[in-house]
Image (cartoon, rainbow, N blue to C red):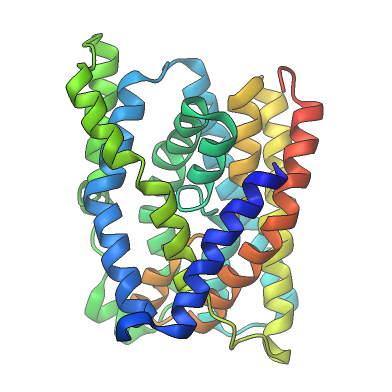
Length: 315
């Protein structure tokens, strides 16, 4: 695990260095938008299709979705209670809710689980995100952003309906197609499997590099300290502990169980930056939360891997 995390960390640091040096005059935000757009519309759907077409789908898939969805909802409730203590402004509360409740299940979780467990880890990461986290962030997450966002921004951008938001995600269509082909028993032909593999193999390094491009270090000031500490404690400690209890309760074992705990232990998701920008939440605070939780996760993830591997049967 230590080797995996240092390799991941080195790629994230490469993104941070790019942000500072701007090789070729290309700024980090532009580079990140290009890379994430490529991943979002082409590479990640290819990975999702390949994995869900060939992965074993059964009760464990439902258990993974249950753990993921329940953990997100519980962390929303915990964060709402915590926000009463930090006395943050509305825009900051909205940013804290998104940062503390939703893990970076794909942009960091997928590379980590892929490196640790191979194809089985990929399947857990994709099911954890696409079967629960992503649908919840495109529904409940947008509702929270609207609730705590700037009224003028809400009026201008709205947020659209939940169904329309889900339909617009390419990976959702890839997941539906992959599950349908899997359940229909249609084999994945070698040529297509190889082609999808070429695309899929690019996802992890580009995600990690893009994550490094998104990190910022200019919001670690006194008034932000309490919200950032609360987000870090909830996202990196309380969420995986809660998920571990759920994993025991539903009977997840082996890679699905350990992978679910690790997914819950991931830092704040990068996607939340989009909602913060659109609804005028505290984008700076959110970006700082992503930076801090990502840095701390390089320490906490190996700990949760050791704990989950020891306590979960088949670990």
